Image 1 (cartoon, protein in one colour):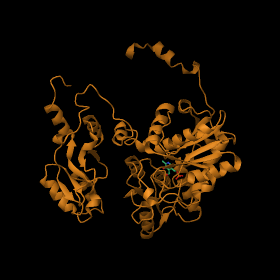
Image 2 (tube, helix red, strand yellow):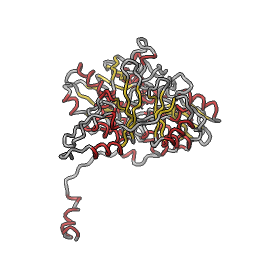
Image 3 (cartoon, protein in one colour):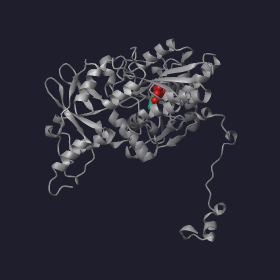
Image 4 (cartoon, helix red, strand yellow):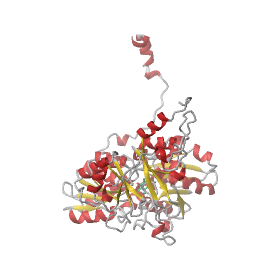
Length: 502
Ligand SMILES: Cc1ncc(COP(=O)(O)O)c(C=O)c1O
């Protein structure tokens, strides 16, 4: 026998019948599911232990694990409900209709799941900010994807909502299910999510904390919970940079970019009913994403960033509850969507959401970036053509050039890699605006911030080059000094290595 296990030893090892058993009650009515769509909902409500204790929360806290839905998020519920409703009304015709939807990704994945099972063509219009993981899931499900600029206001033709509305007019048999205005969005939660929470806690819930995006989840769930348990305090969670919490106090200039995906908007969707929301808590990226990482590490709940935002708000709001009272926090989506984002230490460090790891054993780790070690980079003006940028690229010995505005401040990066990608896109051509060719994701370090080589090395773990700039404090002009690649860093540390350096 291999590993010295005797035949008798193996029999003893596999004497499974006689061992102590742990058995669970099986749902005999659901031996087989007709399709994956029938598995949507009925997510578990899980008691939280370590975080409430360490945060000094007295009441019981429970997580509604929506991330365990088959498509990975709470939005599977509404996607399936909207499809069923539209089919019943004859608006969606299997084999003929094309589903088009603007989304932050998860409704798209829910719709793509339904479209894959039912055989619809599906086109999802998605802002650039949303993760590549969501894009890859959508592609795997057979969806066509159109990306739109994150910064485009929702009422502009360039936004994901604007583009989807245009496509519906252009593509024959296209149907926009429209999660922002479709009553099936809150209804799916009124009939499903809320019923499940009430059933799990025997209609006794003191607080419900839910992140607000379209607001279908919070509005629909709150309506039913308040009917059956009027004492329940409903807390809406809204990121700084969004207007959902204070629509009257803010104006458009308060709308800012934030990293957490799926929550917050610059307009009030029709499926938001502010009457059923008792309190709002604002959250920031650092608090939300740090808490999402804690939910994963300390509670084993593999959720996304908006779950972290909801938990962050819940920990604050639940401090007003007493022992024995019950607070439910909803975790909308899954870690899968963020594997290269907040799950990555380097990604968090690059955005100052976490301190850069220390490494005292490496001699250069704490040295500061200086102008001397930066390789110069060519620049082109933002109003140049992509052909001009390509020519500048070919003349320089680098595969990137910096694109600057009229004052010489960095506006973006033009890279050979990104230009190739743009040109294989059917709509891409060298006669387009240079803006369309710019690399959206790149890292910039400013000499005045005295960034360490250790921090640069961490950035190079997740990006091929780091652009070094120098900011003029009075004019805020960010002059590009050059770039640092792994090659530059290696050259610097090998040529400057002290006698006793590692
Ligand atoms: C990750 C994530 N969290 C929260 C939400 C908010 O849900 P709702 O649109 O029902 O307000 C969404 C919506 O897309 C989401 O994708």
